[in-house]
Image (cartoon, rainbow, N blue to C red; front, side, top):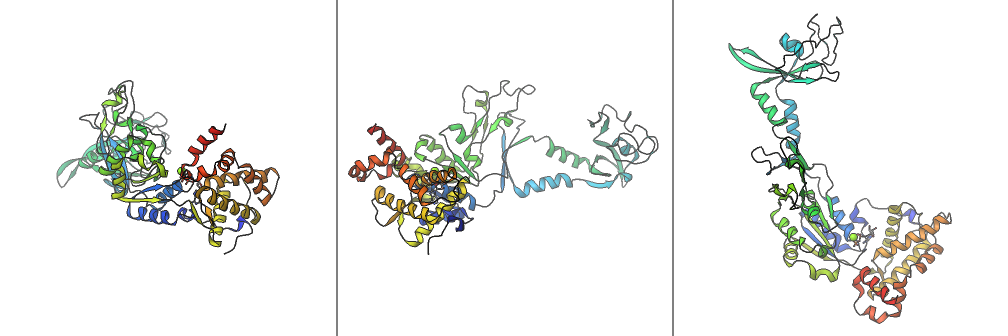
Length: 475
Ligand SMILES: Nc1ncnc2c1ncn2[C@@H]1O[C@H](COP(=O)(O)OP(=O)(O)O)[C@@H](O)[C@H]1O
Ligand SMILES: [Mg+2]
């Protein structure tokens, strides 16, 4: 294995897990988590790939098969009903609606129905498209005086009245029964029995719904701020208090939380420890796989609304720094361990030819991802390797190793890349890289040199937070 002449020659994998460098154990666990739907706790310093691994789990998961809706509850509007539909059911509902009744040609239905649906001209009796207001044969106005005020009426685009559905009776085997005719595509008409009409109406309007978690969705949901409503959902305020005429019905004001949006996907909680008391809710949600949505602002009219049993069957991917392990709710941690895995990320990898090539792959990935900087030549790669080696020694006390704390290297690379762009250079060369290494020897690094022993005395995992603390000490 030898270093490429340019990162241009590096083939970047398409599977995001193959893009993760130096974390073989974590990647193995991520594959298992995706296949077996287990939780994963990723522990390690910043910039080692925790977010990247969590995203890859979502990438490996099958597409969601369920959609979650809330339905209006006529008996008690403030207790909307949750409904979960499988993909097959959604499709068959649609097909069913389309498939109800029987399609016949408009020429095969009673004249009166054909007239009122807008196909048949009352004057000359010829058939034309129902959208044609004027009969193309005789020029008569097809809809004039067409409707009685007691029918279901719709206004056509031009403002003329025509019936959407005509109800009448027919005689089958000497018995009279109710029948309805509905306009369908082209010259076809749907013939529906009374029972089918009721079924259709039931599907169409007696069950107003709001889809809160659609079938087609992103399976990676990240919790950023420690906000209760973001995590658990909410019911919006309505100034009219959901008044039947003036207000917005409660079911329409229901907003899902991240735990619901992550249903059948990955809920990624970065810095799990900063979530504080909210960890308890995550714990409960993981246990029950369902969590109610309630109005969370006591002064809002949403506060009286509650939807019970909203599904939230997610894979939890939690990330945290090593020294924050203590601030995880013990119950949550044992829940994860009981049904998942904990992985400590590596901070270095041995300095071998193979791993140097992997480092080159990392550089290529970063360049492509950035999109604004040119590729790096071998000279630049050699400087990066030298620096990765120095960092492994300095931060983790490991000789003959390459650092996996990639955030710093990515920053340096961008600086070098910007230099190359400004100089109109075709590639990032050793010169640009040297400059970036020197520049990125920030105040922290200088302090690190000065307080070398203190640094080595176990502060290595504090990462960015403590580093900035240290720099203020110098100032
Ligand atoms: N192990 C890794 N392999 C390849 N790239 C990495 C790795 N770790 C970090 N990176 C790069 O650094 C960026 C930030 O990493 P991230 O996954 O957010 O780290 P963390 O979540 O541990 O802080 C990633 O988008 C990726 O570009
Ligand atoms: Mg991250």
